[in-house]
Image 1 (cartoon, rainbow, N blue to C red):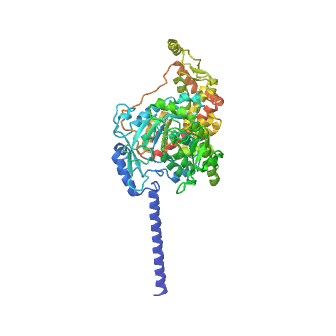
Image 2: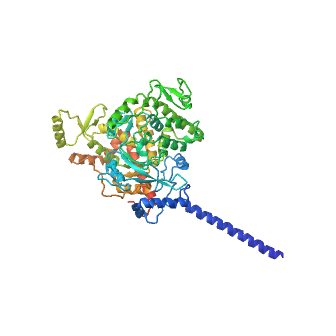
Image 3: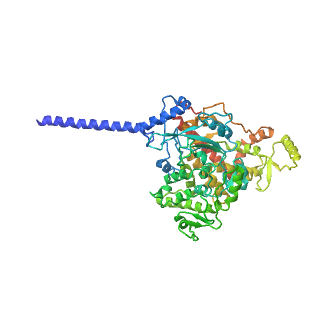
Length: 594
């Protein structure tokens, strides 16, 4: 072979190699591009199986989204709460979370902020179940056929469909006994006591097992209790599910969090939080002794423990909550609070702050504890949705809705002035009942609004967005208003899968349908909830005009930092709603946001 032929041959092999490499790179690019929106842990075969199950169970949702649309292909983020999801929550405080479409996390929780249109939302969510068969949406206990088709795609095998159930206002609100001025805001579900100032403190010191049975699958095939196939709604503050989620569910969550992973070992020897979770509802076998992990006395600096596994707390006696009527149970829990939960609260709060502090040391985390409380709540693998109402119309609605409330004196009870005709009617009714009409105040009494009813209800609204631990921290002077506002802002951006706006309720329903795989809010359109309108009269109209006045709003916010903080959070909610609306528009071309 001549040198010339050899040169031609070398050129041929060189060009062939270039072509092969180029082809492989193109193939790799196509593969990566094809899978960029797919769940990393779900194979294409799994996608097909999942779609077949969804198609069989949710025909109307399929027709609405497009007959050939695979719900996995429009997922903008992995559809499970995996390690990357939770770690990402710690990266950026002001970014808005992308939840993706057709999520299968459970439970589903509607955080119902009173006087924000929640009555209609409850009915629509209840009617979104398959095989719905009842006269009223509230009669779910008499409807044996309905269910929400919740897919379990955590396994590498064929996904399992669980029949999720529905419950409304079944859980108490856990409020500090010192927050008496707020107790009337939560009278519908009922109030029991818990003064813990951290999410873990609320979860471990104040467990509530009454609602756990509905977490079980309707087919009774979910005996492990590490999941909760439930649709819950109530006037409960953000994160209240920590009280009633099954212990195994919480352990599974905790071990996947950035804080819990540091203590997770094969035998869980060092995970004292896990031990505290699984023993949270256990009664003390001997009054004064709480079986705890060997590290807990060391962490809290206790010197009165008598053994490696028991912590001596004077007077501690925890009881199994008895079965029985709701009133009986509430009275029993309140009586037992001082002997059990109240004594555990400071211990578990200290443990929570300890794990945050240790995590910050190892990860060079700059954020302080209060924001990481919000991160803990955001990391729970649940679907929370809420509807937000603008501050000014909400304040007026609350003002005219409640017949009595505390004045700025905090011990004096007053009422709303609704005009002369209303006053005459109220006076007549009070006289018939041998009662006294309290002092009545006008809506634009700026001192009363800034330092009394307006500031109090603004704090209630803030607590819905921040959590029960925030209200406890506020009452005990362990948490500042800035810290509460910061957590509320973080939760709006990260803890709510859908943030709806009252004046865009229909759009909120569309968003829920596309966000959650087992929800179809277009089902049973004839089902409607009762309206709870505040009413209308000349005085109310005068107040509405007044509360729309930018000058009046500015004066009120200048005097009331609580109302000013709430207004800022509402503006963030509008921003989050706009972001989520655009994000969910990618799920289906049928969804056209206004």
